[in-house]
Image (spheres, protein in one colour):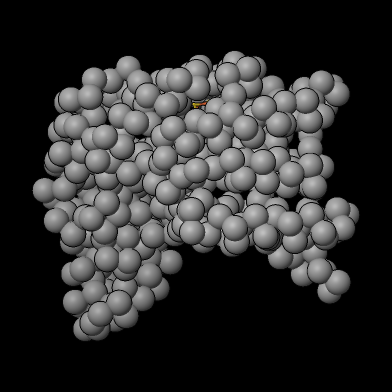
Length: 373
Ligand code: SF4
């Protein structure tokens, strides 16, 4: 242990870092994915419910392939440091990483260095299997550049089983089938796409910059190439007026795509977005808890997919019991419910929710002050 401590004191472990973006899907954090920042921020930044606020509404930037490769090289150096440190600590198995964790807690709290080490440490501890490419729309990068990055990453770390990224549907819509196939062949395993709604009026209203038909074409292209697809939907996005058309058309688009995962991210007006201004100025009537459940019920009833339907976000329906404990109506794990087999289970749970008094539910407005994406 003393030897390890001396490594830290000599600064061997304190100098390396790589660039990290601000967010990744919860399902990637759950598997401790390595985060590799390929682009910075969002190239669109206009959706009125989001406004690129996770990226501080900063201007989009493409990173160079060489810069990203240099970051991957630093990950390799940090991994080697951690493994050497573990050997010096004379421990084995996952326990060895506990020694590293204890020592890293002593690293100077220079944000990026600290976060880089912990990201690699958590990744190694979980088997170094999954990687998430940041930020909001990685495939907007010229395809052959992204292919080069993915190949470099996969060659450097043969333990990697899954490489995923966010993508805008419009970007995929514009790519040729061959380009999507090239990304799959290079080792891109899964794309996370914000569908939000399949209703054209609502897509236009929230300035998503893509039509329902373009969403369908993009989703089908991804599946045809053999890349897994997660589609994110936003119950409540249309407020009271557009609730039914939002639910029906979202189900229609999802049925046409039949993605691998459908992930529910209920709407809440967030600080720094135009939709919070609309809410404050009484231009948007948000749904009550039962109204939102009824909207989800329409969507689920209309779904004819083989997807896994997931409610893996804290804003999904939750209620207080008599002892003040909070319960989520629908399970929150990353694999959710397998459709069509578990469709009736989900509908029965929604019915259960509709029989629980509305004032026992966490309300949409309760989430506003949290300001979390
Ligand atoms: S929802 Fe996605 S595309 Fe729209 S502004 Fe936010 S990050 Fe950009």
